[in-house]
Structures are given as structure tokens and as C-alpha cells.
Picture (cartoon, rainbow, N blue to C red):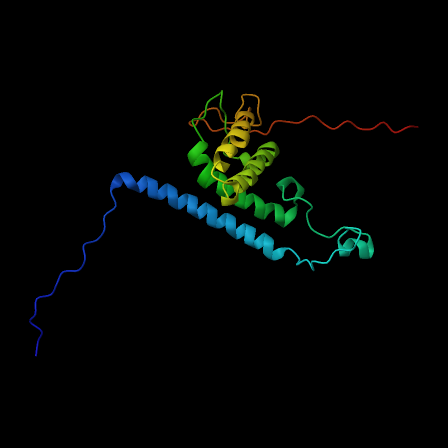
Length: 199
């Protein structure tokens, strides 16, 4: 026998107001950048050797005391101290943060007084400054930084970095000065002085 009872319509689809879509897209981009950042941190933590937790009485780590050598691995998390694959992984994570969080929020208009280069990753000074800014961002946006952490990051780190990076004589001075005329050129740096060899 056929069912003749009236069928109830399904629930109405939820419609997000157009005005809220930009906020959702921005929130999603920030969340994706944070997830990538956490993945990099987890990879970094997973690749670090586990410590035994025992220290010799003189305070030197056990591996150093045993053979007098320092343990393998970078002594710093700063990108300029990394090399090879570690540098590439860190630069990729930094690029995600710069492209999906930093530039959409703090990019501002490009002009001769505030230049920017789309190839910022080819400017060593820009990489160093942006990486330091990102490390500080990770620290000061963590819950352990307290409620004033983000404000401290803006005042002590962001403002100074932007002033140096986007200065007319900064690392992008020979690069883009207009969004409609992209340009990229790494400025030459002074050659290191060669020590005179005594004859």
C-alpha cells in the first residue's frame, strides 16, 4: 500500500548575509594560516630528539659532556640560522603567514613612500625582519601573553618592522612603487672587506 501521508518539507537552507561573507572569508584565511603554522611547529617538535631529562652536575647537556661536541641541529629558531630543507620549510610557513594574514590586514597601498615587493622572499633583510615579526606574533598572540599581548606586538614589533621594510630607502627601495607597475630588483650590498694578508 502506498504511503499517502503528506510529506513535511526539509529544513530551509541557511543563508549567510553577503555583508558577513568577507568576515567569514577573513576568519577562514586566518584559521588556515594558524593551522599551517601549528603543523610546522608540530613537524619541528616531532623532528627534535627527545631529551633524557638528566643533566650532568656541571650543567652541560649529557651529549656535550660525553664527547665535548655540541648537539646537532640549529641553535636558533631564527630563519637565518637555518639551512637547506629546514630553511625551505620555515620560509613556506612564513609565506603562508605573510600572504594570508599579514598582507591582507597590514598590506596597505603601495607607493613611492611605502614600497613593497611581491618577491619579498628574495630580499634577505625582508625575510629576516618578517620572520622575526612572525616569531613575535606567535609569542604575543598566545594566551600565555595575556590580554595585552597583541597590543604589545603591534607597538613593539609590527610598527617598527613596517617602518623599516616599507621605508623609501628600505629593502624594497628599488622594487614596486605602484601596484600597476610591478618591479623587482634586489639592491646590491657592500662587499665585505678583505683582510690584508701580511707578506
